[in-house]
Image (cartoon, rainbow, N blue to C red; front, side, top):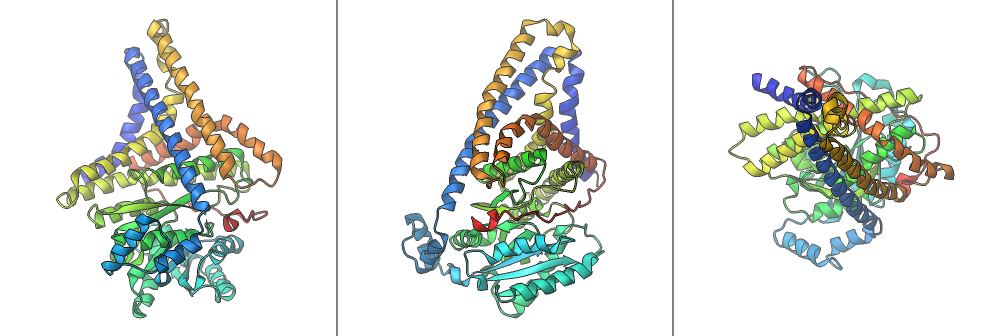
Length: 519
């Protein structure tokens, strides 16, 4: 389809154009390029300051959520006593409309997708669920394995059922068949198969799907001990809860002190970004671990089996399914994941690049969004959909271009055009951009402070001081693990090829830090 191909080419066209055009124009129109660079740098500076403000605000909300007695809060919600005034009114309205779900009625279905992960990695994740400060009989666990890893999956399922059979209300095991026509190899097909199989069982038993909240976990994901309480509280008080999903904060902290410094910096920056978006309702999306009610998932046939980024894509599937009446509810409770770690430094860096390239494949949602918007244009709110589509396009453009435009393109007019180099404007623009970078250091200090207050304690005290030095690598990291993975993904999309799912190897930890399960 011609329109689809044009839409697939557009992200790479605009990103590469923004990078190449300043170099070409510098030969003849250096002042135009310099004005563009100053304006872009000013915009970047304002945005950086804005993000640091959001980071601080999110950090405060995150710390506040750690101090809540969630178990008592859930009991108060069940009884309808000692609730904040706003929540009390919400509960009363839901009760009067016969639309309130009591926390004791809610079932959490936890789908753990696994493929070739070591048993110890898998058990760490399941242990975090078993150690949750919640009634485990209201938690149903589903181990979703792959047929192409049949023997290992069967063995792990047997061990999990033996060790945790008395802990959870139910334990299911599903095996995703290999080679289903039209599916891409990835997590989406596995968890969709699991959802279909388990929902058949629950439906036959007469369980109401609106009373089942589904959480998907990767094999290395460790939920906070109050994860299920926080999700329950938000879900039970939500209006039109079928049209909502619930998004925690993803922290890549499980092995943060074991990974190379550059991987650690990428992991910290990723966690900070998820903190920022959780206080930005205009840009928050589904990412990795999230919770969505089973009735909505069953209506939508669960997750996409045609993309390797089923988490972010789920936002758009839900948005169009509910004709724009869909919202991601941020929940300031963390889910801990592994930072990228492999046997050698080079393998760890290469694996990090491939992981980020897979995340950047979210640019493939752009054709999906515009084509579906056109198809359902009469059913969708125009301005709201336009704004969401703009945010999607702009975020992938900035991801691919901002680090390059800021760090590499800034001196281009002066390097290429000798006549321009001697002008007053060239000197003043360089001076102004230098001041932007100087003031931006304030934001870096904020990030360093939040970093110190958020990370788990290091096994050796000296490691905490390395956090000060790792920020010197930030320009290199933003180039090689920011722009380049995104540009690569967009270029592959423009070429008409498909990016295959690159499984992130999970290594057994030298020593489990216990941070995820004890917080």
